[in-house]
Length: 206
Image (cartoon, rainbow, N blue to C red):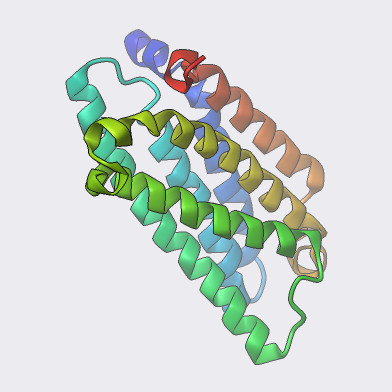
């Protein structure tokens, strides 16, 4: 148990924060009438949890074998998270068109669009570097991009946190879910403390 705690480090805080996010969102959703729109917060919060697993799985890798296994799990979890995020985005768009709702009328909406575009670019680069390195002139060149991919990923995680936090100011949350701003901020502070101290600066080129 001691070895497990030592190897996990601050990752335990990040895991706890992500689970708390999912528990808070899902409880708030299911304590109210479930509608089509309900799928959006359910999917996006679950996507954050899955995405976090893909980040944490790579942070403790040391040997070449660990890195290879970690990269495969990372890719698989990212694919799953991407699919979940797509479900959440599709649901919100279908709901908007059905209700003739306005697009981009909140900070959350604008951040959501930026986040979605960044996710697509991040995933495209990540999967092609791993699966089709020839697009970058070979495996050696693809590996040179890894540090930028990592930096971008950590920046994307912060943007996701900001996007989720901004959701507390939307009409749906204020009128239905009732999630508190201080609670979301506390969850994401724990996530930051859990993830970012585990970053190996040398892997980012510093």
